[in-house]
Image 1 (cartoon, rainbow, N blue to C red):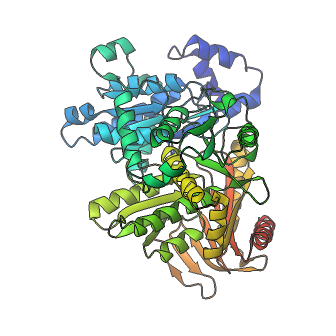
Image 2 (cartoon, rainbow, N blue to C red):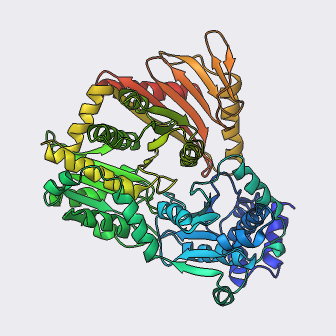
Image 3 (cartoon, one colour):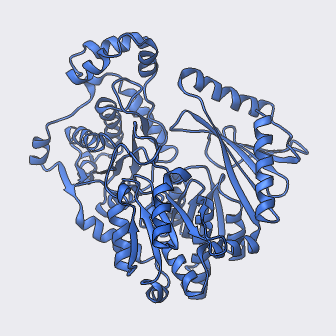
Length: 579
């Protein structure tokens, strides 16, 4: 069907409700809007669904959520190995954040599962994504769902699917689920049932406090130096913002239970607000989102500022600099390196390092990660972008009894200490970072001082991104054109930096540029190009899987902060010149 045929079907089919029809009727004279809503289906990709809320096949709404869940239900049942009743009884855990329609979408998913005979465990109120990852393993579920669009603008929502190991599904399972979702072509084949009937049948169950308590106990196991926290807990001043999302209660609880006395919450961003009215969008990568937190930090003379995104899997921080008197923004790479160095150093000092420890990072994360792992003589593994690949490594370590996971991080403000969850966890990151801050205060320095010491020890690594947003069908084609050009005619240099190797993860080829010798990447297929450059520099091209964007990641190593800044700016301009 054409997009117009789809539009007319949604307008007239009895399956859709009057509210949906009224919304679509209101755009009957806007051809461009009709095309955008119906020119394609909102794709259930390797990260699940993410899209603008609204009626249409290219939007997230109760019907597209239900349809995706029917595909997931079909996949779950296909994995029963002859015991369908058992796999249905294991059930699916479901969490959601503070976004518009999140509770409603969570119920749509639960009731679709219930109608397929699969039990659903639904959190009573909003919860962080990592709590879902923890909960489904704690409950012994076969799968999990989180309704969230992470740090996207308020008009978005999304749907992430997890498997029984607690991680988002990786290859080939993710492709198998996608295939099942695509098989659901008729909305009339999508099942649902009344909530009252599901509850009566014991298929719809509410979860909450018991999971929270168990999660908190697991977090505390990651604390290394309780005594250091005790020394400064009544002195360290922390400003925290949950960006009107799910982090507020668990973050405040863990800091309180550890004894931190001076935790100041940004009042305008404390309670759930699906419109995120105080920020352009609730992303801890955006300096503008910290405006109110910075004001409060100056008033309270804070030592650190912390902020988590709406589903509390990403952490952004600012740290006070006693020399300039300003607060210094940290990237996700910087925060991850601080925590990694602290964990490895203190585990070694206290003789609590597990045997065969391993740290896992992604290909677009700072090269300092490899240097820290080398300094502490631990295994370092790089995976593709996406924390599900880090979660996958944890599972393989446990199954193969090879390594013990100690820490994992990605550049996009996400990390995980411990294995209680299999996704990035901003709550445990807050806890770890506050332990680092306590250590710094106990030793007469700031968190920024500690970061400067890392630069002196390992080199002045600096990273940045260049992002191009290209919306709609034309934008999608343009993004593919850019990738095709870089893949078929790869640059041999970016400014004054020579390309040493090209990693083409879609075709599983590493090309030595000097000799053109080829070897396999050894990683799953992905539309990613990574250019290894001179002087420990690099850049990487990757279309976003959830937004209409193509992202260029890049990193350099300088002789000083100023030198690194100049080098990364030059590399950014060189990347632009090669497009």
